[in-house]
Length: 147
Image 1 (cartoon, rainbow, N blue to C red):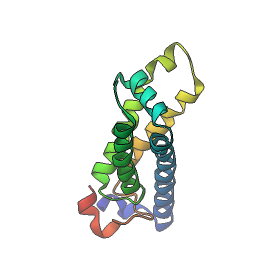
Image 2: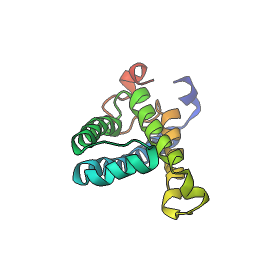
Image 3: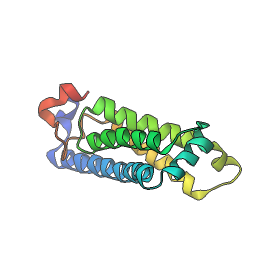
């Protein structure tokens, strides 16, 4: 982490807190989406059909997707396997953001525009994942595993 040598401990603490807050915020949204797959699988099925053009998913498949997603977002929350979990979260949210392109051009749903700052947060977290050490299981001691 040679790049951090010129950063004061106060600034380092601010960076770590900021990245943690981004991670927590992204987790909250992803958790709500994942929870929806368990509480209302019919809604998740409609989302898959309408936005991703994937049809024929029954409740069991939706819940299985939700279970895998839950494991990934929990690992993301605690900062495990950052290259993979942060990358998967970024890709999932990126696909979700871009699949809603009609809402940005024809229907102009303001709710969908909130996806863009969250995508920016996901990209930021992925790019700065080695600096995101606050409240992680894999902290500075395991940075070679996180990269």
